[in-house]
Length: 249
Image (cartoon, rainbow, N blue to C red; front, side, top):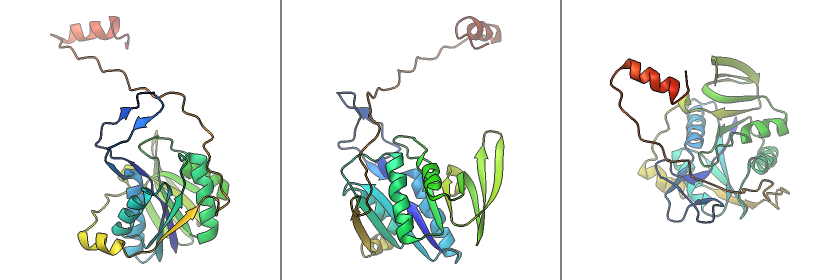
């Protein structure tokens, strides 16, 4: 069973990003970049499927400028077999990514597509759902457990009221939650081996996809500074402030 995994290069989660002076985006100059954490979980899950003898090949794909190849090499070092880079100078947006992945699914014919539930830079949480709709495939989102028994899979997904277990037929699209697994570290030998693994470069034009942004960012602002806390002497004073000042009770 071939598995397709999408990955994105984002600002590292430990970095405090700053808004550009013109308020049109985030300043990424000199900022540490890394593999999107949810995508890293997706790669790990695919690798575990291969270690169990379920997956036969893991293909990772990333869309963006040439710097995306660094994230693809990281995914290859974690255990993916080959990579595809869709090179574009446009800022990627969920619908364009979903359409590109649909074209790759038709080209590669995977039985399972695994994506992170969202990227930590834009937090859109839309690509997996859009891809499933375009392919007319069943989908399991925010999954915390995956069991594959071809031709079916069973997923446990997190919902507001608790956990929901869904069984669906393959092929399917799933998106990963944080509790699905704990990604491994790439070892030095695997990092070296990753340099020799195949990495194919394509353009959106070759796939007949239009990646021009459909959404325009009007402004980006930093969140308001958090007000300092106060110390109260007793419960009565706390209740008084919650009622009269905070207006929460």
